[in-house]
Length: 181
Image: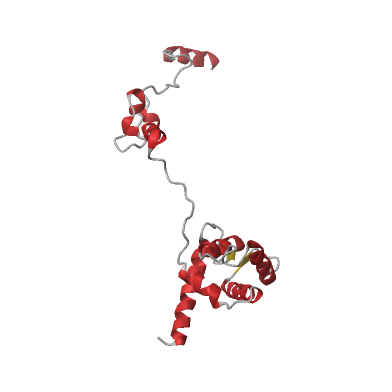
């Protein structure tokens, strides 16, 4: 593959990754990236730490140099950001770009996994598995474990009268209306 085709492929990869990292965890993203997401990307590529040589302060300073008072940058500004960061760190931009492209799509790190072992896991399962419910609680869920809502409750309140068992006397109400007329 020629060098020109290789660069076009990398530019395409960078554009796709930029878009994914720009939208990662950011509902308001319009194709622009925040400093927070740039830091996530650099950290995932093992560039953002003492070992990688780039710190949060470095990225914050470089970010503010490029976009001034804005909170987001587009792809063109991001490429300028990489070049400026590389110049400030006295390294080649390829040394930053290659790991960024190689890192791939955004990954969730440090996500809490459910407790399944030990006494806590057994108790948690017993409390959250609707198939194990007994008595009146069992009636509140269908076979799939989804709640039935108010229809699953044994007693549904009747709001037709003031006191339980009270029924309005229709004849009495008609007599009162006639007296008013």
